[in-house]
Image (cartoon, rainbow, N blue to C red; front, top):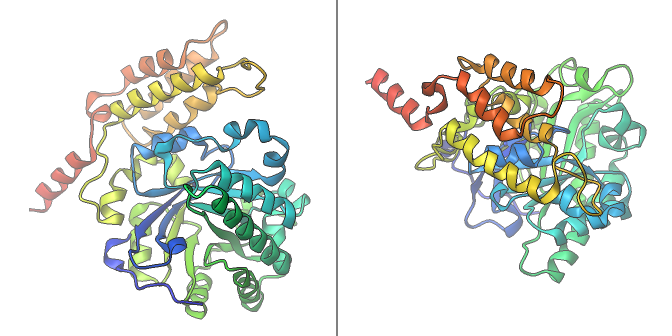
Length: 402
């Protein structure tokens, strides 16, 4: 197995998102190496959130929510709803869940044929009781040979689909896992899991640096109670230097991600709810993490204006509350509104902004349109918050330091 090319660590610092850097001379599947990742999260990293994030950072690799293989196989007429995305969301990774070698291979084939994904990730780290009861997510870590066979099937089907549609580059198949599950939490067992999975040709693994307790802890508790053990991920990188490891768990900001990447041996860092709760924190990601000349540098007023145009276009196509034609799916106003609620977290007027929206949403009778609600709520925010740009912040910081 060939080693990864050396990385210029100076330029690095990805819930739902992955910060990457182009490695010019590496093999095609490794040309975009993850540096920081926005964690895929159910009911959070949907297409609306990703569209908004693309106006804040262009370089960060965004992840979809986990899509179950059976959903795709039984809803082939509705793939636009489950796999659909705006072209601006690229680079975009799709996360799949399931436990069947054949079905996950078929789902990977459908996803590659649909197009638009640079990566297809197998979830073997989700601690949800519902997911575990169906024998996938973190439960799969107890069957490393099955995970190996699933990944081999996914890679084989991706290659077949790419051959059938040569205008769509083959997505890289990756794996996300925990450092252990229940009593299977020794480093030797984790080492065996990784060494087994890579026999399928997997070259990149995202590791949540907590063990998962399927018995006794809720999904929420599994994200916080088991202690973080970053040193386990560092040891994996030492033992498998030819692989790319992305660290997940407890990363608070892009500044924290940059610190980890500058001071440890991991190849990437995944950011979870901190990215969803404070998306504006990513406004300097392209410059700070990727050494880009500049960030998108849009103000939040400009972001909202473009987002509302996007939302109206989607609702014109899909409907807002009632299904259109023979499709049972719509683009509900509540789902489209959700990403905007976090855009002003921690800012003066941010709580009042959300309170205004909540009040309008709770009124009896016909609800106002999304644009009317958002534009009305924006009136409680000061212009200096709405019109602030990251480049202005950087100029002020330089002035203070000079």
